[in-house]
Length: 135
Image 1 (cartoon, rainbow, N blue to C red):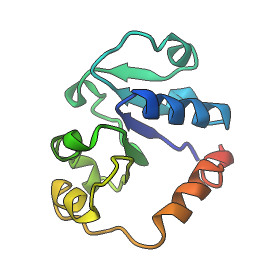
Image 2: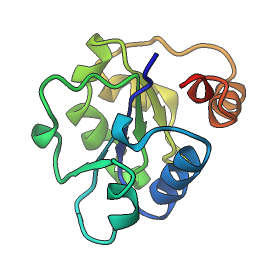
Image 3: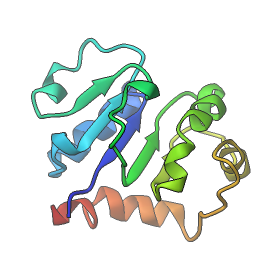
Image 4: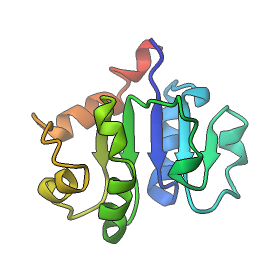
């Protein structure tokens, strides 16, 4: 099963996560990145990652399993709204925006209300490759 990721924001935090995922075995071809700046990512492009400047540039057929929002907290609401269409497609969302309440993220995503369980536990397992490692 091919696991696909949409990383929104590739600053220091996003870049570190992307590097870690690729190091742990996630295939670059399964990653799309949206970032305002497109320069300085050659090492990721060389591994097959695709980069875009805005959500409307993403391939229409792209349906990520996970949408990772790695943007500054003050940008999380407008950015989440921009990607809320992926909720209907069954994508899981993860935000690394510090201090953002789940209710704010839920509202920005259209009231999906589908989060449950221990988020830290889920993220640790995901990062350890329990889902990625099966590729």
